[in-house]
Length: 160
Image 1 (cartoon, rainbow, N blue to C red):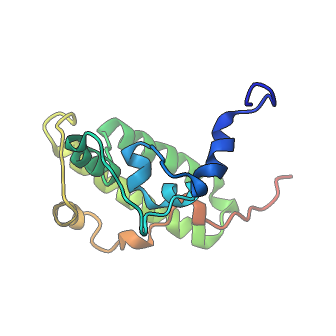
Image 2 (cartoon, helix red, strand yellow):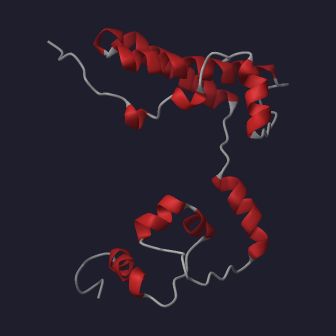
């Protein structure tokens, strides 16, 4: 049918998920709530069979982890500084404050990653250890106040 209608069958199958008796999907889609919701998959009163469950722990760890290298942190900081410098006069003060908070967090990351042997050392931290290690550099920054770019107010002064 996909070929007949020149459309991707993936989108047609998404609409049939709620009435399906059997749905197969990767762990990531099963374990990530927003992905499940976007696909219309509800786990209440359902039977979930996990094949190859020995891979489940690695998948959960990956879903709730993030990696950041020294080069990524340094590049991000450099780009952010250039952005702030270039658009400072056009940014709302609330956005500038948020960007400055983000800059302090990135500076803390760069400082900590630089402190490790060559910057290539893998450092895995739990939330408590993360906070303890970075607290001295960003002790006055509430990480929950550092917004995602999706929450910035986008109001610029028009260019002439």
